[in-house]
Length: 102
Image (cartoon, rainbow, N blue to C red; front, side, top):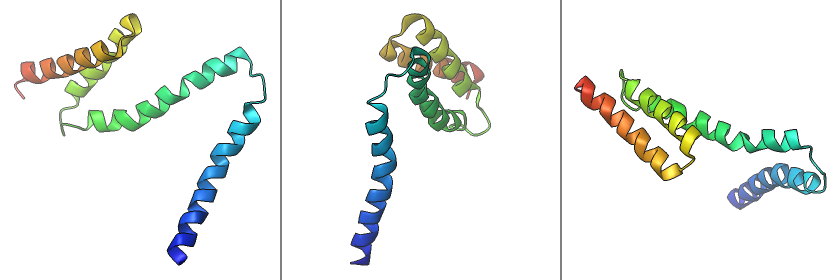
């Protein structure tokens, strides 16, 4: 019984901080600069989750990950195609690993 109450309490504590801003902000007309700023938040959050793991994937040799990240940034800046960006990024990381003899 205590476990069920704990799960219900965690559900309530998690639900309301997400629900209340959604309900209140959906009624407002946000300025364009705020909308533009909010569009970048998912990318920033994703970057903070992926970047440390990518750089530390091969201990002592972060250059392959750095090359892949730079290739992905540059390619996506010009082409905006996610599948090709992933392929180019993987190829750049592989090329650095291959050329370094790793």
